[in-house]
Length: 598
Image (cartoon, rainbow, N blue to C red; front, side, top):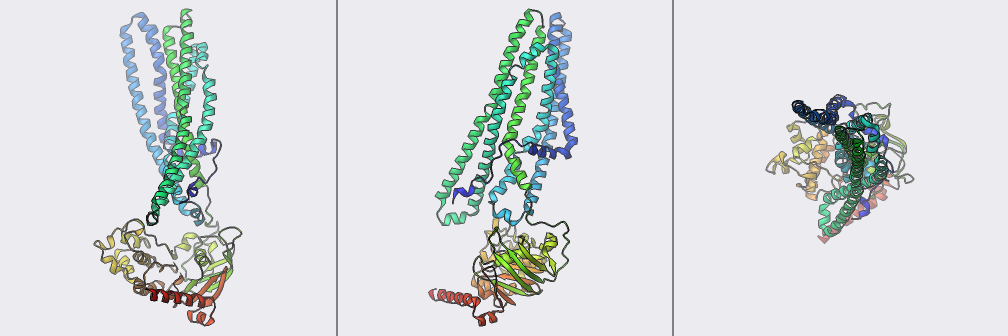
């Protein structure tokens, strides 16, 4: 399994994006009530913290100096009381912001999930599922601390720093300037560290995404891995990706570890300078001992918020890559979306027309070139041709899964570009070649075709496609758990359940893309009656390599070289002795050779 398939697919952004920060903070808007409550609680905490050093100064310079022990004990009681209130307020603000941050994460995750569901097939064609999963789970989770601490740490700590600076300057501006002497050194170092740190954390998020993508794909394809005895190779790739993840984490943490020592060193040196100059000022009678003690407390109160802010900035830098990756997805406009003037498609009969349709998945590479045909409601159309000729593309364009380059696709005379996607696709049923079943019971998987269907309707649909008999052989019948992707069932059983699901949905247009490819010959004979029931009364497009399954189609269209090269009934095309004749006879001979070899 090539490791390069899981390398990061985006360029690293080189600077902290203020726009991203503003966009993140906009999610706090609906929660201004709890945010204001939190800020009020923090205001109480800050006032208590700011008053503590002054109360200590008062106790030392007045009550201790005068031997007024009664008032000193009263002052001590007051300090205990207000600090208990501060602890309670601090606890309450943590609970409030915890609820707010988790509510915001729920909003972002739901917004991201809903947006991804609306994105076009081209988005999923170019991204491993594991990387998409990493955005919804890991990247969103990484924002939790950002929202919680932006209110509980950033704003209050900035207020506290400003208040402490003002208080120190008022108490003694000379000693205040001494306390701030190491601030420029800390700011320069902080700027350098933050610049490098952000790039490294951004790289680490991408390495984490690569690891998620590989792990998801490897376990999804575990049957292939084990059948090819490729465990050692995939383990090697996994180990290499793990090492890249570990190395990126270590490099990011290593630079981050300079944050705290830088602040602590500035804090320590500043405190030493305050005591050094303060002691000499006490000797000259410029300040009192109580003021120096209070001043040392204010110095701590100045540097502690800076340390907290640096820690918040560290979290912001660490998690900003996750925010950028989330908004990168949210900013992707679906290639296929409702036009501003789109109208709901009324209930259709099922007429389908292609008018000079040209289409290519990649620019400059045409899959269909100037294709035109008309299909009447209720007809069964078989699309045949070599692999990659464009059969599935024709079906995809009917449901408008891709935007055509030129021409028109019409359903009952309505251009599919001019109707809403929901009204269009709700009347079209698609059964892909790779039958997908969800984790859950057989009953739930069939009911997915019509979510409000009764149990009786589900059973009737299963009976119509010959699925009821094998379902009832399970101990729990329709309430049997199929496991993830239906691994508990055989390929043929999964197909039959998918048939029942499609029948229950009752679409006016039905597309079967190699829908019988995984059904063995015995099961195929049993299900033919069910398929005929499925096709009855609705327009159907059947894509099949097994040509024996489409002999009774109303019309067979041979898709080759970007167009419809032959069209007619089975008998007409056989008499024509063209490409369909060659495909049919060669397949017939191949099957005969297989039977003789068997």
